[in-house]
Length: 227
Length: 241
Image (cartoon, rainbow over all chains, first blue to last red; front, side, top):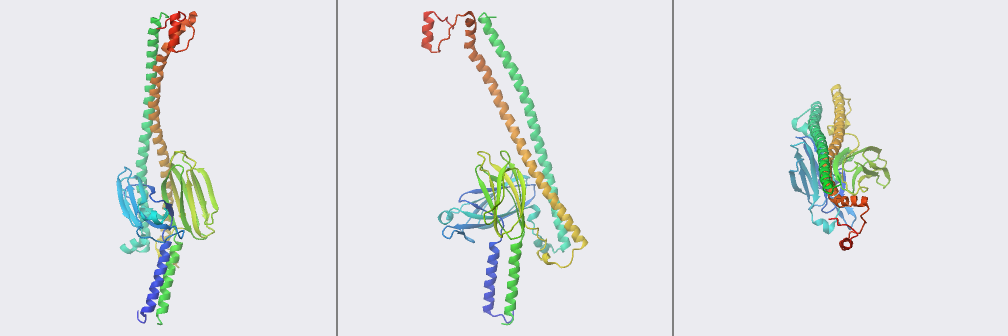
């Protein structure tokens, strides 16, 4: 670092910050718009013991400039995750940019709901919020460069680790499939039983009411001396 | 001062490289969301020029399991539009750099809300380590074996996802059928009872008239109680009670 004065260093720092800022705006991929108190829910059907990582970033709409502001501090998003039995697994308020993680303990449909409860939007935004969202499930949630650095793996070892993770995910999915097939089979058998017993019951009721009708009318006819 | 310029230039170059890597970073989004009736939901993604992207979607639950879908390029031209599709796959090479939007619409349905799954993949999969993009040597046998296995396992996972979605759809239909069988059966039993009792009840009045009509002793009169009373008193209509 000899020979570098404070002037060029500051200029370097400013340029670095500018480029990093440019990096940050293109950081997330998919985005959608939501209204002020609108709730958007996403469903993830996952086997048990699977990790889910979600990243989001919000941008507020500027009514005067008719453009989305690059980043707005003070916005809040409430993230709520429910497991297949309806129990709340995660319910937290994050800032305008956040990352949420949860691990499933029961297989099935987990519901991830996002809504903004920021009151600032009503004043400035005209009610529109842009949300960048990225949800990664299971093996996709692993950050391999990080794992390589942490466990000091060579490239080949890292590839082997990735294959092992993939195979583990396939095994979990297969267990989940067996569980689902069992549920499906129970539902079908229940329908079968219901159709059978209700048909029998309705035929019996039909015959009984027919007999009752005949007897009632027969006694009526006898009373009226027609039979 | 002499070493400052190349140092700052190298830092800038490094950052530019990072920026380019971010720009080229292949992305994928796989989401399942609920689409209420008479609603439309749109998603947007920035795509570079010349990059191939693909959109797979499938309706999992709701109504007739169909949805409208369209994809628009940054200039607003519709590059894909389908109505009432259950599932489809669409691939496109982006000609223009910009934000592409794809929308799912349930506006044709009045009361069924749908669950839609979509998988939007942009570009190819990144290498496992970021600095592997600029390797100059060929892969060893072990490494290419690993790559082959990885690709095969990805196919297996994709096929599992496909079957899981189909199974979810079938399961939704089966559970729907199960509850419908219950409601219809109970409803039919109630209707059976109502019909048989009202037949006997209502026909009591009607049956009293039949033998008199056979003998020609009965004239139809209106059901007004007063008129019937007069008819009875005048002796025209025999006492039916």
